[in-house]
Amino acid sequence: MRRLLWPVVVLVLLLALNVFFTPSFFSIQLRDGHLYGSLIDILRFGAPLILVSLGMTLVIATGGIDLSVGSVVAISGALACLQISQDASMFTAVALALALCVVMGAWNGFLVAGVGIQPIIATLILMVAGRGLAQLITDGQIITVNSPAYKVIGGGYWLTVPFGILIVLAVLAITAFLTRRLALGMLIESVGGNAEASRLAGIRARGIIIMVYAFAALCAGVAGLMISSNVSSADGNNAGLWIELDAILAVVIGGTSLSGGRFSLGGTVLGALIIQTLTTTIYSIGVPPETTLLFKALVVTAVCLIQSPSFRAKAFGRRRRTAQPSPAPEEKVQVRAGVPSPGGGAAGAERPERRGKATAYGDQARRTE
Image (tube, rainbow, N blue to C red):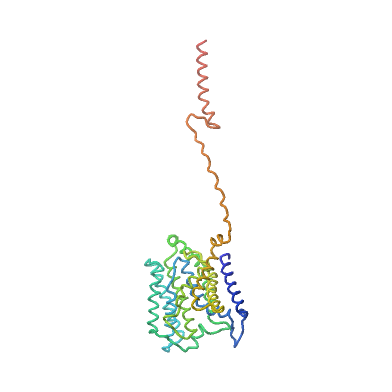
């Protein structure tokens, strides 16, 4: 819980800043059976990033990284819209898109775990080639569709709540159950801590690595469906552009180490919400468009520094706990030959001398007699 303290503080500060510039920021209205408001917009527009970040969390927990999720987002939306534009059913289009995403994720995992390529290189291959594949699917054009059923995925509502938020809650609940209620989370953390030791302990590290990369691609595929269905079109060039960097940043802000090991799903969700809230804040306070990226970079840098214990210790003058002095080494007593030692050694050294003197006195007494 202590790891989530600073992300929560940063999120609260961003929300308070929005209230300062927009007094009605926290107001939520019910119109035509749908919930509207700034908070609802943050959750709805941040849903794709949360999904991609959840998959990225498990990949980073194994000590890897996935730079191809942005391209997978574009491929998923492009293939689904292409199938729908060719009069395929919505379920068929979604199934084909997600199946292709899982195959691409498994391919990344095979390159990392089977071939032994570094994760950043293995996923960089699909990052470049996948963006070109999305362009081939759309033929370099923006594919527009008119499917009310497909529109529901990213732009529809159910029980007054945006459907995308419900998808995120479902994926988060399933992921939390599999990783925290079952042994899967411990196996992922052990592989990230030391893959070779895990293999020697009987854990199938290769299978786990392939599985997490496939899961990350699946989450990216669902996010691509949400993005494309929200605008009823697919853009192979701009869809999901740089979302992989925001996902990595959300994971790091959430407290998961890039070196692998322990991970936090709740922290990842907070990190994604911080990034989306920051984007909303930039628009609400009127930051000029030409300085938007610079402002975002400065805020993110400040967030990371606040989370750093060593930086807080230096900035706020906290004294580190003085280390307890180590106990002095025990003095070893060396006993030399012929030198009486304390205790029984002295008595043992004196006895031969006494026996020698007694023998000399006895011989002298016999001679006098």
